[in-house]
Length: 588
Ligand code: OXD
Ligand code: MN
Image 1 (cartoon, protein in one colour):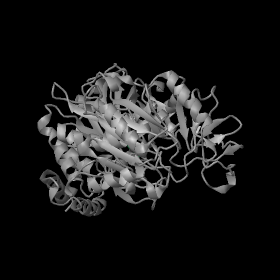
Image 2 (cartoon, rainbow, N blue to C red; image 1 turned 60 degrees about the horizontal axis):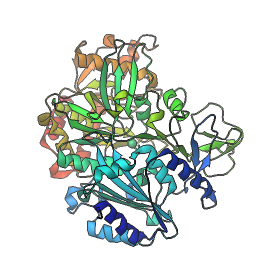
Image 3 (cartoon, rainbow, N blue to C red; image 1 turned 135 degrees about the vertical axis):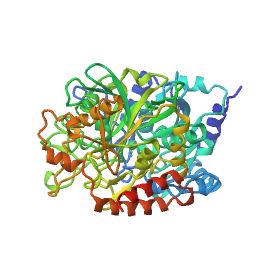
Image 4 (cartoon, rainbow, N blue to C red; image 1 turned 90 degrees about the vertical axis):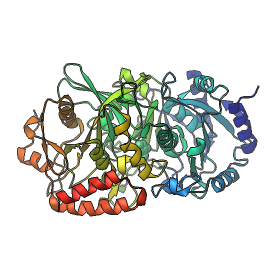
């Protein structure tokens, strides 16, 4: 008997006409075999993978992508629900019929001369009721190996799918890596994504942004849960008690560093559950529980170093999983090790830059691409929590939202209610940095850090968030943070990194009810004497500045928020408009 899965794979291979169809089983032996093939197979004269120094970076390989294919391409990413209004102004819409015709045209015969890798995988622990069954195929060995790191690949997915047609269908071909023929099409109502022309993680590892966030957020809307662009961490206090947090930050705000934090405060420890994505359900006791559906980290290399993220450096040097991949970093030829800006103070003498040329230190250009990446299994991470595999997930006591703001946003405050928290998350803004295209320092609104990842109308998404006050019996506290406030001379006032544990401690004290807060216009603020600032050279005056609110700045902020809200039209929920009115009155 043919299962719906087998039937689908047959249909797809009839369309794409690969020379060979290979079903991945997720074993170590298979990964080693595929890596060997990737070392000998050449694309544009370069091997797909090159082995790195096994002593310093065990099981590690280097991959150089096409220079035109180094990041997510939001302008080529579509959400194709039948009704345009359902995708909102936060997405680009295409009629599903038109989108499928376009994609089928590109897919026709695209795997001639290539192998089609069929990748069955589960997002989440297969033992969890919250886990989801998925299958992606691809003609890229790099993508196939990356999927093994980022998801739970193997026969378990095929067994779970059985004779059902209810699984995520991911179509991927790297095609000819031509930006004019590059599309990432989402069909949330059909649990399907079609991606062509890119091998970049966010465009091609379809379990990640495409499924776990865009399709996942739509499924969550329909099924009563949330798929979020969030870290999941457990903070252990000196008595051994663990408090679980979620954290959402737009890019370039130190999200991964917080997920793998080595706290400066004595006796505290951060346990990692997730660095990018959380699926949040109301548990049987009425609390919110989160799982990380992924199995690895796809992180930005530049800026990752001993000071900023020592735990990630240990993770990258671990031998606990095969393989670890480095993409578009530079290579230090004397040691055959990957290198990027921020890894070490000294720039190695003999380097190849990310595009393959000899690196010229005097060029003023970075040696690694600013969005160069590592792909590494969670199994390699020494701070991975035992709860990572817990099928129920972890009970969430606090949600942290943040952005990068030189001014306006205080270091930390607590929201006074669920509605106020959802409002605060909906107005997150972050300044663009040099690592992003376009002008630096421009404030971009990025509600819940989900603007590029919400697979349906964001106004409906806000309504869905608000509905949790009725779905859950006990809700987490919501906090807002900004590690990036600067003084009049343009100097960061807060040390950040490991010292952010001081803020986590204050949040735990608030959750435990052991400290009081001061009510201000924006929410509930810490009293400076309640914050653990021991062994930190920071004056009371600076702390006051970090926690201050400028009426003038907030008046212009409110104008920007109104403009932003207007983009979502009539669907914008009343609760959020009411919150904006309350804020407006406070600064009138
Ligand atoms: C990511 C992103 O790659 O948020 O995680 O863009
Ligand atoms: Mn992300």
